[in-house]
Image (cartoon, rainbow, N blue to C red; front, side, top):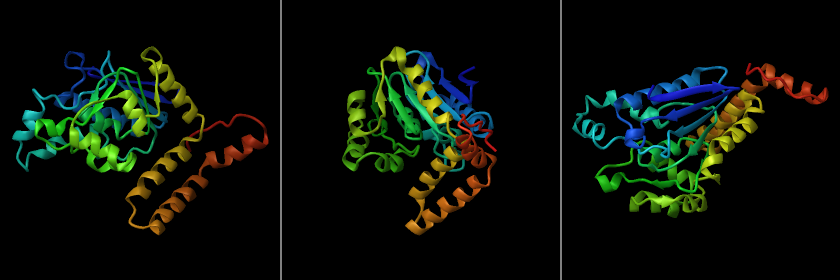
Length: 260
């Protein structure tokens, strides 16, 4: 199976596995990765996801040999069939569950587009990051020109977007692109530690928190953003978990979340 999906204790681990091409994605792998994200979105028992790559690469984006030529040759009427390419990098999917990236090697081009759709980001010291598309004559159109300047300071975003040159993990951490640098042998364990910390909280409240944050950035006014937050708060307050939390606190025990 080209994209592995493993669910354990509310944590879905999605592994990009195309080792012969350093985890660069062709149409089949873009389709499979998009399907994995939809499965995570729709599976009630999946509360947090970890995305990583097989062997010593994270993702090199679209394969320059057998994906990009198809994309550049496509006319306006054909481009809808490439939708899985943007869904795979989390551009056209509304997923409000938390996603952790465990970057175990090169994360460039579409790999960076995918990274920008995640919430918590860990990398090994050997990882490199780069938006290489302009050096290949194309635009990084998986959402990065929109998302990256909202996530890190403008000069840092422009450094990545305009030079089209890779940077080391230490520079990515300095920019605020990463949460942590972790030794490669500890990377997945550390990602699971982060996932466990998040999954210890009420899943509906966590999903609503991410949704409110994302939608607030797209809201036209502060008042609109606050209305979104209020609606989401009401929805969470109507849940069984909203009653379980205070009850567990009063009874001095760990809460038993059901996600309902």
